[in-house]
Image (cartoon, rainbow, N blue to C red; front, side):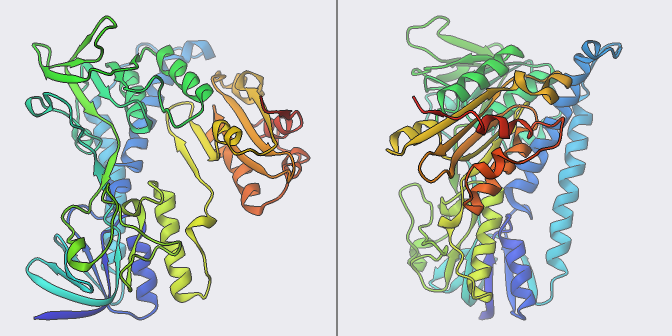
Length: 458
């Protein structure tokens, strides 16, 4: 027997639940299917729990610096069980909130189980077959497990099962020197663990400009994080300490010994067991579902949103995917993915806020580019709070006077960057900010100063 719905939403990440709500408001009969945790990666094992851990680590770090501010603290210890309990409480409340929201929607049937396509408009779950004219895929991704020699012989952690850790590893080795790995590296160092980051490239976060990579490395090493780059001979095996990681063929020491291993080498979409072939839905070699500018797949009546479509691996881009789909379906508003300006954060402390293109990309574009840069040591607010690490950098098209990209690595950089992002969306010249009067003392007040001293890019 086949049950008929107006729409089926597969997955409950950041796009699925709000779209289900909009479909409900339109009076449709909807099936929402989730095989694991309501709320997806962000709510359960991503943004919310990890940034909660970052918050605890920040308090521990600040407490150790208290004497510099004239505050006397007699010893700092970290109760990892309590840290986890706090994280579980905050993430659990978010999970419960999304679950309650879905369960209370008119016309929505929430189904727990694994969905698999058995035809272009047909899905099977828990032995039942569902059919709908509109199907929306929001199944997200998971940690990529790399092909590393010996990995099948040792225990390892990912960003997901790391959420179950309620103890302090003596020495945490992290394979992967990009966004996820670096956030865990700093937080666990601040909790008190020895931490070593192993990265195959010649610098951390290699997609960023070299000055960003160098400054981030300086921040982490300044707090005692060990960094091993150019790790061309990565292999793992058991050791008396816990795990041995080979990191170099030539440079000594060639091996690092630790108690625990965390893999942070990227993510893969959850499409391998979705039955895409049975539905005729096209995907690329990585398993990402191919979509057009309106997030439509090649199969009429099927959309793919969020991390699974490869058009943005962030919570904010996933939510924007929902907005694009809803606007085109119901609002006669032809919003597109290409309307989006790239923006994201690296939530180490101090954080990195990034928008638009990098300096490297600007140089390669052939444009007439201007650049402005200031160190955070020149920001009064940063000096007052004792956090002067990092810098600001803004790139401007000299001909159109529009801002091409920017980075703020420093105190409140993840918030201050939005001053620049909003002007970029408005397609206004940089002079809108450079002539603006910002509040003193803030981090954002230095942005006009940066833009008042632009130089031709080297």
